[in-house]
Amino acid sequence: MRILFVASEALPYAKTGGLADVLEALPRSLVKLGHNVAVFLPRYKGIETNSVMMESMTLPQGTRLRFPSVRSGSVHRGVRYFFLDDPFYFDRDGLYGNKNRDFSDNAERFTEFSRAAIELAKHIWTPDLIHCHDWQTSMVPVLLRTSYGDDPAVKGIPVVFTIHNMGYHGVFPSDALERAGIPAGIFHPGGIEFFGNVNFLKGGLVYSDYLTTVSRKYAQEIQTSEFGFGLEGVVRSRSDRLVGILNGVDYSSWSPERDRLIPAKYSAKNLDGKRICKSALLDEYKLSKDNPNRPVVGIVSRFADQKGFDLIAQVAGQLVRDELSLAVVGTGERKYEDLFRALAKDFPGRVGAVVAYDNRMAHLVEAGSDMFLMPSRYEPCGLNQIYSLRYGTVPIVRATGGLDDTIEQFDLEHGTGTGFKFYEYSGAALLHALRQALHHYSDEGIWKRIQLNGMAKDFSWNTSAAEYAKLYEAASAARNQNAVLSSN
Image 1 (cartoon, one colour):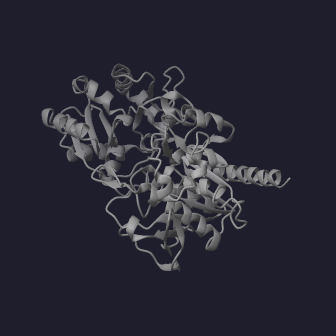
Image 2 (image 1 turned 180 degrees about the horizontal axis):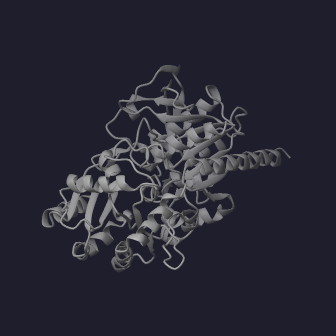
Image 3 (image 1 turned 60 degrees about the vertical axis):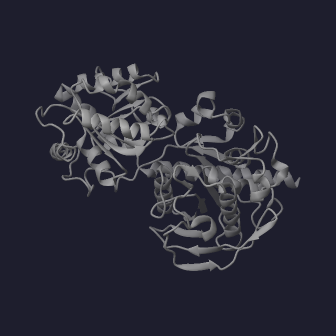
């Protein structure tokens, strides 16, 4: 099958979050299964390309015409890359905004990008299916079923739409319809209207052939008022076309047997290297070595309420009184950056913080920590808890989304389980789960059992890619059936 991925970011070209990791690994895994895969991205500032595929593409945008070009990138591990080249819209500092503010013309930018994806499919690289990701690409299915609804070259192409985070909608004032060139006829409650505004994500939910999200639990959660962010009714109405497929991880980069960024490699057969990594972590963070049995709790995250940092702030005073050290790396909301800086200053030798995105330090924290804390309010999938399993770093997580799907509560009686979970979103519940882990850490045999249980888990992309391949077949069949019904 020829599969065209349309996304606003993907490694190795552009990244702000986990979406970019998925858009690197999933296409590559599908190529291994024998599929022909291409990825279409905006050409952001600094991205180098190879050749011009289409010098000038004529795209309507309201009362105007725009003339961007399409360029070709390198082929990475069998995956082709194409780029929309429009310097006015995309040659900027930042992908979606800068200085913590979204660009005011994001509706125009990403509608043009979506329209260009359809033109790419029509003139340059014709796919059997288009796989879109998040609100920035939601106008692909919208335009395919409206503006291009009678175009024989593309009208039959099925679309799978993946929701990576339901919290981001792409909501704009109603005048964005005219500015971006979106058909006015779909501005109604059954279309993309949302409390008087234009909601891009809603367009993807309504007009795509199949919807996916990045874990089974999250597919259930987004149908509730707590996690649906106002669109839970729309999701429930499409529940027969909604599938949760867990994200995989790239073990070529995140595995202690292969990791080039840690001071010593190790495996489930020989954990000696983990002790070396822990010693290096303590040195790097200037944490005390007065008690070699004191556990290190690691955190690698974006600092945000969604990630549970309000809970950490609630219990920070109690955390530092427990017999543990804390090693943190990440960046995000200022109040949490300030919190960790203050804790590191007030509790030297017990709390260390690197307030930055630092990939080397992220790998060291995963390898050198004894436990890994992810108390998220909601977590569509999560990757770090899966990395932690492979590194023998026992996860402590809130049972939500992909965290609940990937971590099994340790059962002392049966010796099963891979970590510790809490359900109630409270600081007290977090502390209880953490102290359960601390209790079991004191028994070396029990702790090693938990580590080995986790290290034996396989969350590689192979299984997930095969599930997507089956879904693509189902989406194609559904689109063909719709075409037959329409012709009768």
